[in-house]
Length: 164
Length: 164
DNA sequence: TGTGCTATATATAATGT
DNA sequence: TACATTATATATAGCAC
Image (cartoon, rainbow over all chains, first blue to last red; front, side, top):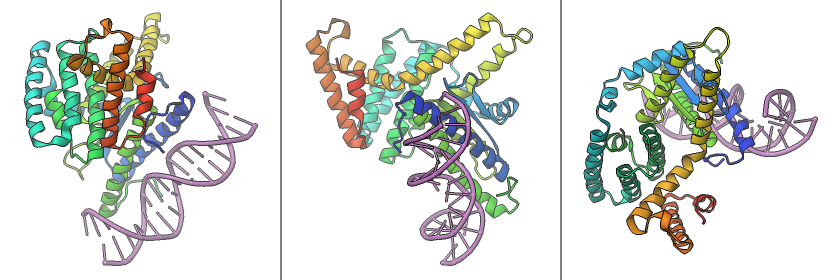
């Protein structure tokens, strides 16, 4: 099975229903058998409501625990523009450094630069949520690359340079 | 298999490691194959850090989306949803669907914009031959990426989204 | 511990209704 | 569509090291 978006709409819907059910079952089993606290949230156009495990309050508990992590605060932003500019400066420095360190990162940097340029002059009057969404899409893509190239983790890089 | 806490500590740990890995893989597959936004968080004494999917920032995005939701749920009037709420639900579903549909396109557009800014004129003034040239440049770049990353189907994306 | 192996259970895509 | 069936793929417990 190719690990990519299922093109056919009908097949994708069918697969979604099956896999969602199985996945939620899996996380339930994991939690029950191993006695661990866990939660899952799935947003899909196939469902009106977000699909969650365990209950809404159960998810809230785990989510609040996660939000309480110290790392959370540093991502909260005061002034939108200044943080953005700082990110760009930091990002560019990081790009330079990484280009020196690792030529294999070329592709990644290419995408970084894309984001940089787009952010300086947002092409479609992008809002902050748009940029956040885009950022996460790119991050996913970078993780994809990192997996294939056996990099350890690009999350830090993304967090440092791209998150708003 | 009895669906209850595994008593033996060693067996529970082993089961946890296996199942955690599988579950995270499953949610990744669900998200990738079906193009849905999802996250999972697992807290266990077996791991120091909470185990999550996708990245920290990815989880944050979903978590914030979830936290924002109960807010307008509380404004329900009696048993029936107001017209306003219904349109909000519809709107959100539409957004979710569009997000799903546009993910691949967004990445491609980034590359397009990047190339646009680095070497060619703004797209609005472009002539058809210019666009064709740009398209082939992008295709070449994508094939370059595909060669490095062992992708097989970049051409499809280009054909679908960029051929002008 | 963790890892590799294997028999069994489970999940899933494809297909038909 | 959703649901049932089935052939195949995947996950996993138990055991050996």
